[in-house]
Length: 385
Image 1: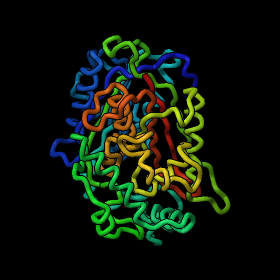
Image 2: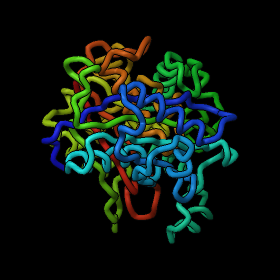
Image 3: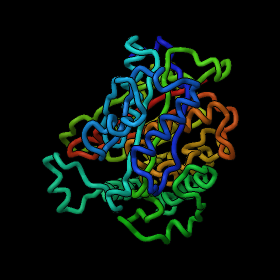
């Protein structure tokens, strides 16, 4: 996708992530109204809405937005597993770049507490799901195998994984919209209930969480955002390739491929990025994505973590929002919420978790566990002022 047409983020908003008594329509409408207000526009000024969700059912966007009295504007529904929200942003950028619209709203919303908690269900229409289920291969088990491989291959102990949770949960304590605002010690992480060895409970993102996030994308330079409003410089979505032989479960090939495309579009290198929001559904995922995003060489992710480079105050803070581990992971909302955090960081609006001097941000969201591929989808976006 050509990014020759400047695409700006005119306004952003999100609800608190956590358990809500309010229904999904109320959460979604609040996020949309707040994002429009942040952009200084009326809802009717938007020409289209892109609504991302995973478990909500058919024509959910129309259901969620019905009570806002929109004048028959097109509403597109987007489902791409955990990458749904980021995919919605990508599709909206396509339409803006093509000149179909000049102002659109992207919404992500989910109400996972309605599912009752526990591990999220596997892909229901994959021919391997029944076999995986019999073998106990829920997603935590898949990531636990990746973790075991990482520990074995690079000769580190399980406590290193726990340090990812300590970092992100301490970041989350600074975020008033995060689901978990309690900092934890390494002892608390490692002594929490074992889920799948070596992943303990505090190394897994919460599965019972509700929330919504929205942003306004526009080709009109939003003058109220100052001389250098946030722009989308790179937007890439990739799907997994069929792997017919033994694959490297530590490679995150799909994310590496999406990142290369996004970097090329944006004209930046990994070393130019100042702040990152990535898909830390499990602690091992963050380490794997350090490598895939080009932050380090293979086998050096744990060293990058231990150096302090990815914590607040470090060279390239990762998940200053608290990430999925602390902020929470309401699937359809996650990719949009990552971009909300990135905008707040680039505009200096992130409060106690502000990354000083941030000018370039990257968001990465991966989703969909199906047989024979790394993942079903991965989205990488690069934003800058």
